[in-house]
Length: 401
Image: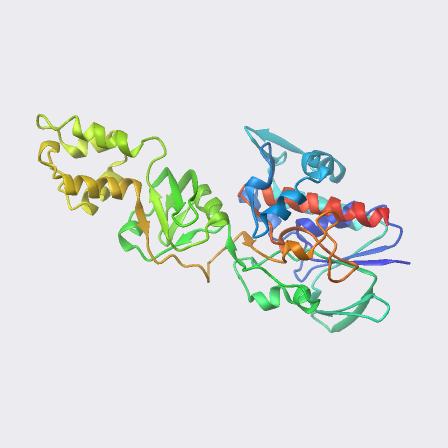
């Protein structure tokens, strides 16, 4: 009887195992944690985003964009609602985003676990950390597991690697260990970095504004990619939806912050210049668009007094003020050792994977599901959707074969 090992009981692993309910063989789902879906329980602040109406390769990043686009031509992408229906995932729409109907991620994980335990061909093995894998002469696989009590060597005909990426419940871990199995199988990785993570930097002046929130824009000035959405200044840097999404596309350390999404640079300049006559205070004009805290911060950065009259504003200081509001540079951004990271940017190279089946091109019988691949979606259900899509692609391939 054919035996399948699924390594990693996050969303991709859980979904794959459940979609293999009709597989005429044995399915084993392994995870190093004490329970399934540990990260899934906390996603979306515990409410769990499921999917989005706008869902395409454009909302994902990869170092193989052409292969990513090819992967997204799979019918399961547009028919992902059928996958959720099969898995029993109920959700409701809030504008363009779908949230779990119960808005209770831990309860949903418990439901999925119960469904897995009831599945006749599925065996759940928790606290089993896969540390080694080898290909046997007959093409099957021997996997080494470390458990609290012993070390086990188990053989399987097919292996599905769905172990996620760098995030390990606030412990990013070591790349070589996290991707140990694909590396042992001869696969290579793209550069991997924390993603859907906050921006941590050393700018004390900006960090002193902790608690201030606004809708603004972050731009990578090298690749010219920008994200506009809500953000908040924290004691360590910047966080919020815009910041998390920006981390998925950021490629350099050259970052600019625009503090407004509703005002253009030329508009503010024109408004200031039209008040050159009279005794209009610059601070009052800025307060029409910004909070008191941000207004005073802008004035301070431009070396201007809160009593500054527009008529007395030197052109050089006006330029400095505009630069601060619309092109504030974020210096010395920390790229590693983040306190948290929801996903991983990068992973197993897509050119080493058959995008139609998600089977390894290098080692037949090995498949990849979810975040372990070089695919990374924006914040808000994109990666959970991709986990379900990749699970359905693999299940289709194995059920047909």
